[in-house]
Image 1 (cartoon, one colour):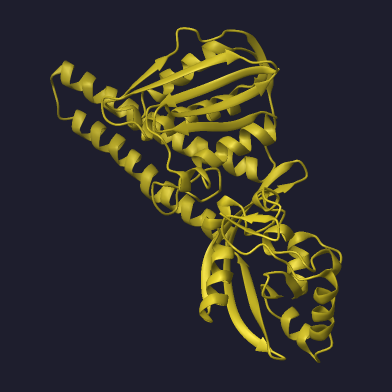
Image 2 (cartoon, one colour):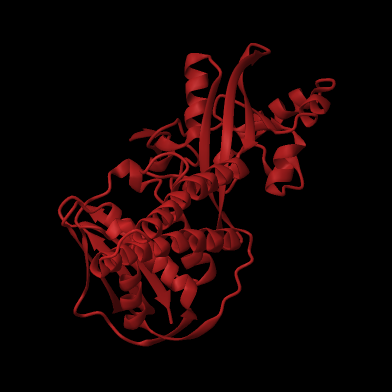
Length: 381
């Protein structure tokens, strides 16, 4: 971590150009004949940045994407600040200076382009704080250096690839995971037709049941996520037993392949109280927490789960003995980010979306090498 003019930074320089300099640079480009027409003709966001990574000019596509009424709302801001990125307010230096900014594709692209004088393209995930909730952006960002009036600038092209990332994720889930589960069910039932021994048939039926549960869970999880992102979730609240909900989730996850050769133990002190909430969403959050813990647990390992009373409500938690590396911690709730490979990264994101946007709770985690990792969902009563 470095310090510039009393402003701390974990990555990019924090210093900024004065407002009057930013305004002067904007007016210089605004005066160029046809520049606005050329940039507005482009089908994607195009902005010009000064050496301090501040926006000094942009086309209307950026204003349209962000709902800005005037360029004045964007001048002098960095990209993360314009998008209301949650990390842009973590440090007094703003966008590019927080610890998480080290892994931001947008900041990386601009810094590398400026330092090496080359065109750089990176993918960028932004979690933006909007209207009391989190809006996730998947962007492709291209930074290209250029000189004008003996000064160095950067042209920043930004393309929204959210639909593409969603399509890829869904294709992976439906054309890979779900087809595999469907093939397992079909294969087991086909095999069972040629077996006469009742005990062997019973065993195959049990395996077919497990595969069918996984198949249905994969379909329903995507249905819930798509509905949540499009704002189509209708909450159906009813009275539930907090501990029974937990036990039912553990029973369901026991049929999932991630629980194979691993044990899920419900804490003896699991708190029981009647809660009023949406059962489907609550169970989806808890199941995702437990699945996440199981995926990080070695064979023959144990995941512990529980629920406890807090000052404002109830907390569900899932603990495993493996810690999360720091670079993963900083990106874990971002859409499309995953440690399991490309086109994944929906589990922790959906926990955050469903738990905080719809159930008004808080999803968080704590992790360290000595104590492992605990994911928590705090539900207010």
